[in-house]
Length: 309
Image (tube, rainbow, N blue to C red; front, side, top):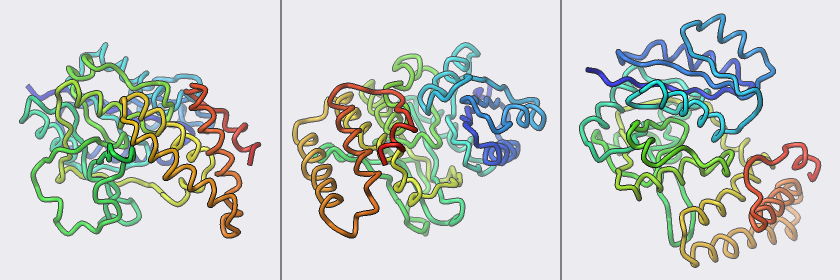
């Protein structure tokens, strides 16, 4: 029997992207899947439009913005109760190749030790340029990066699944048995680094994390816009420290992160004239470090961060 895959698409005021994503999912060649949209308190008419255009989609309304972790955890709890064999977490700003889910499931089914599988993710506006082919963790320096980032795909990834340190939450397939054993995403993260910590937890439970090169999706992401956002910078800064804490990283990783990177960046942004435009990001970074020091996790008020800029 073909395993049941439940696909969770998280939406927060992203109506146009979500409708495109759902349209893309209708083209999947996989014979046994359901789609769940978790709406995180949208106010852009998303709920009504999704219900009208995709009546077969299961819609869960959280009533508020619970972040990536809270929203997806709501969907994961629902899928556990429904008895899905696999769950695919999928960003709403993606579009998928018709055979992407089939390839992911085939790779996971072929090896009982596989706990998580992820596709090759390309930039939507540069469809042959890789955004992620899995992820790697440098435990000595305490940082993570996407494998293959910004490389043109000329076949260097090969055709066979290969082990990676983590799979980005943009598109992450997890087995139900693994989910039941390791638990849900850690809500302390709210957004960013949560899937990396999850994959570390899964790997430490004895499962493999794999990248499936021939499974392909396209992501409408703008790295430049993300890096300019004080809010994104806050969560990336704070949650890297939470990641180190949650995974029990060694002292050298902490020292490199705090002094070789964070302190150096803060000094540069403070004294060099060309970084005058980084005032908001600098304040967000200082707030992130302060909150991490005091154990303030979870959601951070966006208005608070913007007000500090």
